Length: 99
Image (cartoon, rainbow, N blue to C red; front, side):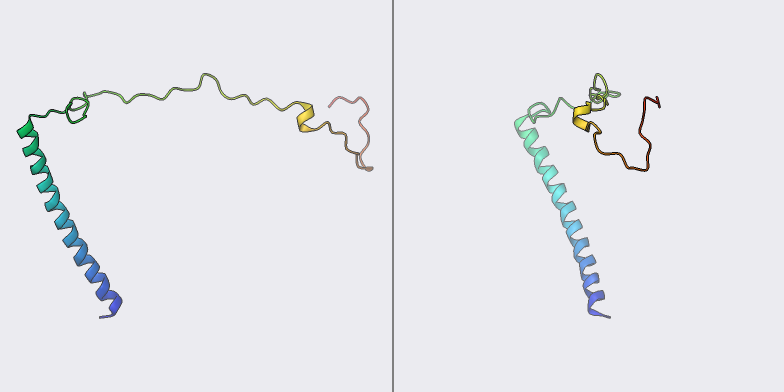
């Protein structure tokens, strides 16, 4: 077996041990918290919760929509340029022809 494969096996083994240790730790913490809550007679509001479970069907607060879409006006001619550049010699001049 190559060294890489051995290391991968060790990683898997250690990950399983870590998962088991975490599960056991969570069980211990929950039991400890339940004992403290019962000892001091604490409720959900004392712990900073909103008062238990949310009501069934309660909707999350909605985000406000903007009142109107953003303006898409084109900038004034001064901003976008007056178009005063020289015309190429191959193009005819515009002489009052509406396009």
